[in-house]
Image (cartoon, rainbow, N blue to C red; front, side, top):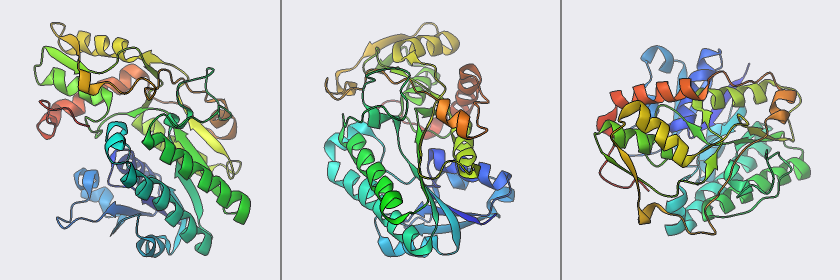
Length: 325
């Protein structure tokens, strides 16, 4: 079936995608962020029976030479490597440009040389606050944070390589993904880890925004279904459940399940600037269901159950006393 390169394979979604690809019989090369400790992120937690089928490539997507080397011999690249934390993008926008835009350019340039199929990972944040719902792929873009602006830039670069050079590119746009291995940077593990640590005051930012949450295994299989379809080259495709829940409702449900004595406290430092907060995200999944065989396999309740179980077993890895930016 040809070897697949996964950039960002050491991360949350990337490690799940690597795992699902191997289970489906694909040969996988995992591009992980180089570090002197020789750690491979979440891939270090996967069983050896699975990892023996994974080739590790250590590098940095900001380095075009390393990216070019990594792509050699690969039929496709699933490009997930990125900086994703919105609050940190307020502080260090330069690094987001270097990683998210220049890193994507490096992948596209290398793929153009080798003729490799490219799946570029976008984000629902590129849409900004919904101007209509459900949000389909024709919805206008709005850069409400430096992070989202760099992802818009990366998406448009990918589109330009498809239109200018006929590079086989697909832009994959997951709505909010959650599940095991996610950092406390994200809202669901933030709430759960505080509750599991016995906190009675659950510190959050704004409670009114709504999100369309995908369980991570559904997101990973969305990527694979898009890749396996012969109708997706040149397309931008949402991965969405077409259901929404507010952060406040989500927090109340998790409190009910884990510790009904807890209460929510709004913490100033967790609030985003008013014009930067994305108030509503509800995605349309019509395109992905028409072009592929993908359907969500997990209900929100099932996904939360698996996430809570994982975080309970790995609570020692989370710093529940500080705000994880």
